[in-house]
Image (spheres, rainbow, N blue to C red):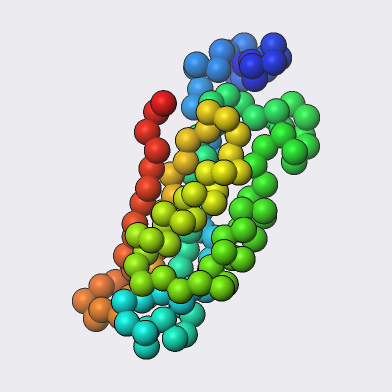
Length: 142
């Protein structure tokens, strides 16, 4: 497999081209405490939300060869960025929260990468809802 720098990688005993694989980093759940809710009383106390990220790389990241963090996306950095962004803000809707986080994460991705971001409000104050509510922004192929 080539990473765009003329390197090849044997996968299952054969050489494959970038077009033969889809390459993605899945970050299943960044847990954040966010002041989120339609009413001021709901926003008064931070509540747990989860942020799921799927980053589709245009090609294998350099870290596949170098085994170095600077050749990929640092998920610890993304988690800290999201936590810091939400710490000083209030949001009425998960749609707005998702859009702001999408913009922050998108700015940290390598050229050609696509992002899918899902925000899950784990315990909305609606008796009939179980397992939370989600909002997703997913970029299509370019």
